[in-house]
Length: 252
Ligand code: NDX
Image 1 (cartoon, rainbow, N blue to C red):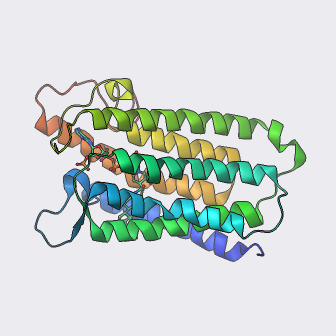
Image 2 (image 1 turned 120 degrees about the vertical axis):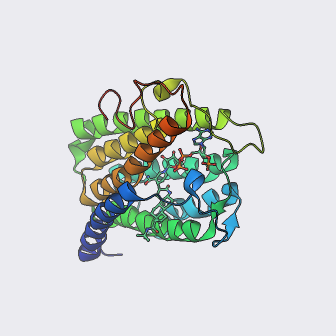
């Protein structure tokens, strides 16, 4: 398959614009899942485990499919970065989804999330497999090394923070408690902070428009979510730690 340069640029720009629109809407309102789910009964609900599996799986399957249907095994760099992407989505779709104790998830959000994950999986995989060129000295490149280190630090924070949230509930419980420990001592959105660090690291390592566009979208989508979670805790819990910030330790 040839590099579809215009498509890559178009999808990346659409993702950046989509990020800006989401940010504007989500600062005023909420993405209606989890604690902000619409309880009027107007949308069909899916068990959280199934929803996260089906929503996130396309971001793993589409790159794998593209890898299998791409001739030639040249380009270790592009495969390294694509496997890194797949590692995140293997964790999110096959491990996180099995373990989550979240409340039922709206079908319409699951479906639009699955469409988003399919398009993003295609964009990142197509760019890396068919468009990116990494020269032979790329492996000793400071951006690659720094980016990958940042990515794995972010992934560690994200997985650990999601584990802390899960540990707050017994099976069947869907109440909310104050998260404690790890980066939650500093921010209400520790899992979101980890996810953002991850994708910023990935963007630095690959140094490309599609990966920066996805990192930007992530900030725009889960940044406001961290802000609303923080407000929720402050309103609900009188003993909520005053020094804790929303998303960025000591700053915001
Ligand atoms: N999924 C990313 N727009 C999104 C789904 C929704 O992975 O159509 C973006 C993702 C999608 C969105 C996705 C893209 C844009 C869409 C949107 C829907 C509408 C929008 C498609 C794909 C759209 C148009 C129309 C323009 C196209 O009961 P509960 O569920 O609240 O329980 C929670 C529990 N918990 C607690 N338990 C006890 N006490 C407490 N205090 C608790 N606090 C939380 O922990 C959950 O079970 C769990 C985590 O909850 P929460 O709210 O902290 O995180 P959540 O938002 O559920 O994210 C889970 C993980 C997390 O690690 C996060 O970083 C990552 O997924 N994530 C999430 C969203 C997007 C994303 C990553 C990314 O952009 N990279």
